[in-house]
Length: 248
Image 1 (cartoon, rainbow, N blue to C red):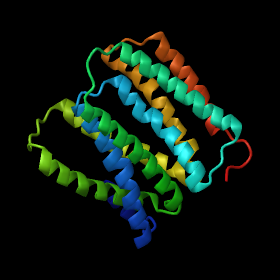
Image 2: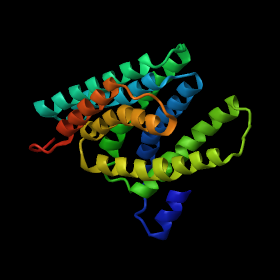
Image 3: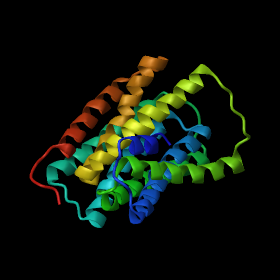
């Protein structure tokens, strides 16, 4: 609703019916499957370390799939960057797993797998079919589709309990303004201009940066391995996203 109101106010370009269809498909992957899967996994007790795998596997799968489906080519240095990014994620995962003593349920693992596939698929669809999509209206369509699907899931599974607290409203405001609007629009803008593999490689930074934020905000222990993982992931992102020639 916010995006559509803003689009109307600034007279943003209209969206065509084919664009609506592809926006809905991309939104289903990136928002319903990916974000929905993350929350389901958290509800099943997913630890921080394993949640890093969601962000860590997505760029690898996207890079490989984009090579075959979208015919996007990475030069050898960029493939080295993908490998370094994955190594950095593994280092952070090991650090987080060492700090976690609980067990992981089958439901959490399944939700993780769905999330990874959904995000990779949604990214590829957005890159392949959403290059000319009006960002504001297209993203609004993505969220409308996602809201409809998740509403059905909520009706079937939730208990209609809503506990209003300042922390809850702050979390919702952050999710709305920073994540759903700012971050997603930036990602879609990048996908319009850059190869899917290069954009998705930025997700290599998620595990390490989340670990650092957890240390600052929640007093979680930041291990040496996590710091090393962040440095390696940064090097991987640099190699994957740097300009060298022209990507097809």
